[in-house]
Length: 256
Image (cartoon, rainbow, N blue to C red):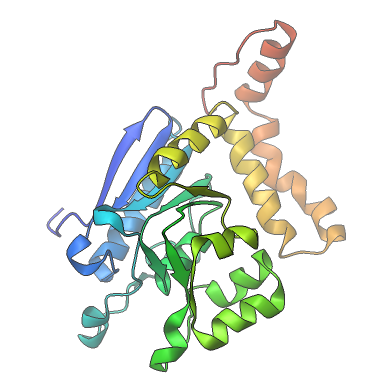
């Protein structure tokens, strides 16, 4: 790749650690970084040996949102295929965990909300401060946040632009787990290890149904969930899981 490597990856078994590597810009996203994130999401989706992704930031902070210097140059940090930051409108089909240190503000919080689980250091700070600068948060935060916390509290954050400590978001159920400062990635890895004990196809199918639940009526879900879980139901992994249960042993997942 000719572009600087602003997204790096590391494998830990079935877990892919995805690091935003622009500490000099507080891990803000420009177009090149968005393209690289899209490529990583594509790879995670395509690789049957990977079950879960963890997104974190280098240099002690998660993400300060869009790179405003790049925006001033006329760049939009988005891709046609996956939207803002290369994933907002179409994140990986596999479970994603955000491991947050420092600031996750603006698009940084929207990046967290594109993930399925959030582990944040107690010292982390999150918010949608766009309105302070005459900007509107269009990376999904304004509709994802009120699905994860009470409507009026989400409205307060959206309209004041307040930045709050991670403990506030944990109290409201947005953050799954609080960590000691410096330990968010370590704790996210521990959480991911719990997930990868399960069938990767069942994980992806369960994620799809839970996501659909916030977007469709219950009647539509009864009709539509089988299409979402068909691959998992017809998989070799399902047969392996049933055999392993009957044989009282740990299953060996293939992702097929």
